[in-house]
Length: 248
Ligand code: SF4
Figure (cartoon, rainbow, N blue to C red):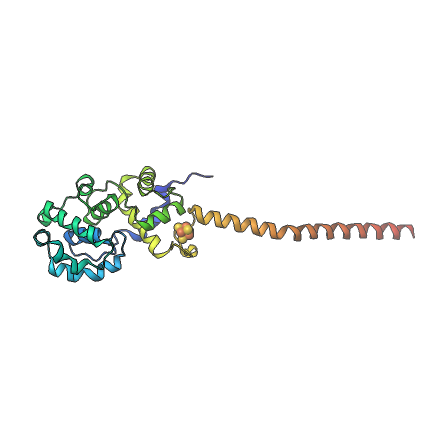
């Protein structure tokens, strides 16, 4: 199989989604951090719908640091795992104190409770900080192995494999671009291969395409064999006729 140069192959995808804002509708870095923590194992749409009330009540890190779990619960209680997320947010607010205290490096972000590599990568990309990794969300986890740019199911290993084949300058955009491809085109069931910008390089698409060709070839085989037999019979009949007419 030909080895794919991913830094070239992924360029059209990066162009398509370059600079597109994350689907979380945040208005500043504080809101982004809070929404990223809340959105783990929940949907961006759900968090977007709850965010305006939450940020009216707690407009910045200082306000969040001054509150207690009971005051936060009414705004987050419909969010998955809200108990732990409340604890994490209040601890983050106590540590950072103000919006200006929000760090933008992988080490400092992942040292905060409730923030893993994926969240840190998203925050750093949205804030325009230099990328230190590639955000692997649920969409990337599904699409990257389909594409063949990575394999397995472990987000850390998938991130490492992608970091290996892509230059650092592409890291920030690559995660989001593959995520957007997964949200819009490469859906979990019935991916829209026909409109996919990556199908020329996609391992999954090639495997489907390869199978279709094999199937078509197998279906054609008996027809071809029949045609060959008929051809031979005609040849034989013509030869017989020619010999007979010569004898006359
Ligand atoms: S070609 Fe199909 S499987 Fe491959 S990335 Fe595109 S939509 Fe997904």
